[in-house]
Image 1 (cartoon, rainbow, N blue to C red):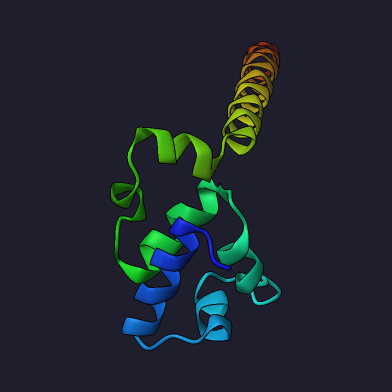
Image 2 (cartoon, rainbow, N blue to C red):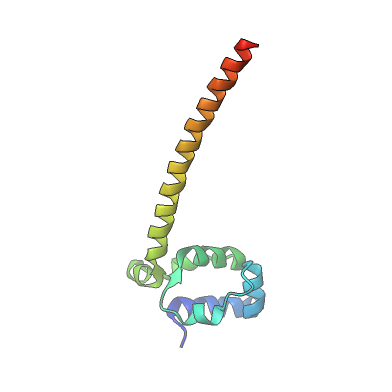
Length: 112
C-alpha cells in the first residue's frame, strides 16, 4: 500500500506519462527503487525536492504541518545541517590557509 505522499507522487507520475524507470532516470538515480519510495511512510526531503522539480509540482503543498513532520525524513534534514556545518568549517580553514599562502607569496615577491 502506498503512503499518502507516495500515492500523490505516483498519481502525478502517471498523469504525466512517466514509468517508475523513466522517473528514476530523470532523477538521475537509475538504481532507485521508486516502488519502495512510494510505500515508505517517510520520504527523504532532498528526494521530494528532486521529484517536485522533475514533475514540476510542489508536493510539499499537499501536506499539512503534521503530515509534513510525519512524512518527511527529518533525520535527513539534521544530516544536511550537520554537513553544511562541516563544510562551513572546512571553508573557513581553507580561507585561513589561502590567506597564509597569499602572505607568503607577497613576501617572496618583495624579496625578488
